[in-house]
Amino acid sequence: MTPQLTEFFEFLRFPSISTDSRHREDVRKCAGYLVEKFNRMGLKPELHETPGHPIIVARSEVKPGRPTVLIYGHYDVQPVDPVSEWSTPPFEPTLVGDKIYCRGATDNKGQHFSHILGVEETLKAHGELPVNVIFLLEGEEEIGSPNLAPFLEMHKDSLKCDVCAVSDTGMIGPGIPTMTYGLRGIACLEFKIHGPTLDLHSGVYGGAVPNPATMVARLVSTLHNEFGKVQIPGFYDSVVDLEPWERAMWAALPDGNAATIAETGVHGLWGEAGYTALEQRWGRPTAEVNGIGGGYQGEGSKTVIPREAMAKLSFRLVPDQNPQEILALAAAHLKAHCPDSCRIEVELGHYGPAYVMDPHSAHGKAAQRALQRAFSGEPRLIREGGSIPIIQAIKNILGVDSLLLGLALPDCQIHAPNESFTVSNFEGGIRLNRALLEELAG
Ligand code: BES
Ligand code: ZN
Image (cartoon, rainbow, N blue to C red; front, top):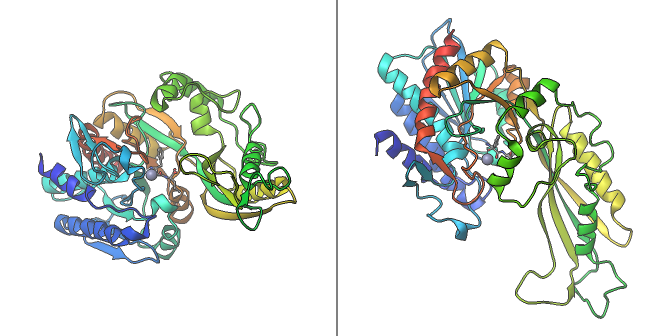
């Protein structure tokens, strides 16, 4: 084990699950670990309290005249459920061949820690960096970054920068340099159908009263037509179509339909007709059911009409869909389809818009040169389906683009059991950071 891997493993061991209040202290300890690391590097860290989890800012010594690069990452991680499906303990980093298994290994601890180590190596070798660097690391990305945009507003002068660099996206395959120039946005909601005032005997009352579980299923089935088109009126009104050059560029990538089947283990694809899987995943909006429930879930049968049932939905958005408008349209659609015999309750959740930048801008080109130096081969330009809502806020508030230079591999299982990060990409990320700072220095 190299000293760098030893440190990375220490960082991984904090169960910094932001959504789970039982882990509040663990999230804080993880932030504390970063503070110590930056102190050891001489980067003068600041720990900023928020109503939620702390935000860490660390700055290199300012050299006037040099560009400033903001490096964003998140040290919070997703929950580990279902824990029984992990082959190794979720918070005990385990090295098997080239892979390090641990929750957060890829998303996002490994990816931003490699940037920290890249900066450390450059400082050790040269005593200074070719650019000014500000690290901005938050502990709430996985819950929609509720406190980061206000923080950016409040500190926009001290966070003034020329460009932002983020490794929190994917690479299309091992060793293939990939630049993501767009992300989908997101909008979440939850709805509940209330029926009878108590659970009922399904033989005594069934047939005469509405069943909330059935109604949830009926409502969910109104979301799409048989061709995979979302049926919420107005949903596509402000969608910007994919450009012909993007469709051509993605068509030249390895077969995305086959890869999607291979990565997910599905028997076949199902999505909006007229688009390839990569187009559906990266450039088209969706409606997804993330959770659905109601009624008896235990062993055997129980003849009951549940008094209520629910579903959690999220919509992935593309330019120029407005997340708040989409939530309003979706809520109206659900209410319009709920029969009078039931009561529907809709609770709106977190949201953030899609992001797209010009990959051929001067910063975009510098990023591609850095990718080429760190990994070999021509960088691939993609958009991705995941969301990092703060990226558009960084654009709006700080006025800069984000270079999305991902190190997540298609089989890294982020958000799922047995998440992993490869040692190759951990080392690649360190090389990428050094090359990127040099290329951005001009
Ligand atoms: N790193 C991911 C986003 C991502 C994954 C981008 C893969 C591109 C490729 C990020 O940590 C994440 O999971 N974001 C959440 C958003 C959030 C508001 C819960 C997401 O996309 O579900
Ligand atoms: Zn994530």
